[in-house]
Length: 475
Image (cartoon, rainbow, N blue to C red):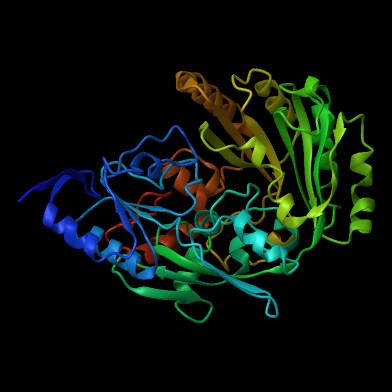
């Protein structure tokens, strides 16, 4: 009987499966199984970050919950390394593994909207852009995702920043329930009344506890918003950062905003002579009455001498796509991130000094204002998310197109991040880092880590789900 070549176990060892065992597994699926050499294999193993070039032995395109349970049981019993793919957008590339089994949820795109209750139940293959496209018809919106192609599962389980975050909180703060397949193949619902300990862990603990197969969210009335960019020359960057700092305590919850440093991509509403120029921009989304938004944003729009004011009324579903051009799929990516103690003059100087030496025009540096607002009104112990008291999130999202440029871009990113160490709060948003390891795990989960370890022992004692910012059941 023919054996399937060497596969990778979850302990990084090698194992061999018979062809009969693999065929029996395939027969039990409603969805499609893809193997090396099959048509579409190379496309199926691609993720957002082109730096990731892994070759799984088996990719299961799940058609429903039964396929997920079948795949989890097969992987566990066969001791296989497991990756779980939702949107495949996370920069670590943990949605695909080398030599193991990928549980691919990207085809599970079911959605049920209840306009009267203002809820939506969404399957894990949906992106935030797809979800909000349909919600827009009902004048509703879900908070989550600055970039529309980001998948729902990973972003939500790790927290969930997005364009409504200051008004309505993190994506996970709007969760009502999660359906999940755990490591032992059980299908559970986690909510405030069912398996509440698991529900606590899923809100901030990432993909450590199972495969989420649907999410029930509270959604909110969001029709037209004021969104867009105010672009200034890089020479004004210091003053623009200070403008952010001066207003973080006074802006209303309806305004979610941040500062971006980037080189201008080709955009139809910008003069060609601006393309490729380094700039600083204020990115905004005001989710409230338009007239009030015009009043709130007037001081920022009148500040300095902007090159372009591209703020305008737009449907919220359109606003969610406005940053897509800065984070395109297919680029090589390496990201470093941390929350800041404060946006001091020293931090601003360091950011600007480092950005002047950026090796790639695809790189974006971002300082988000996430403090105050709805995030801070949730009790710190209510969920596993540990960073509700921090005001600024800092991200270096390095991107480039030529693989030969990888070393210099990674080196520059790490050097930049090290230079920011004096200003770092030693806390990291779990969805924004390329690196793994115990230091990152401690920074990501903070004081929630001890409780998360206990729940990992309960729901995944063998650490089947380890391709993530991993919480080891051994502590």
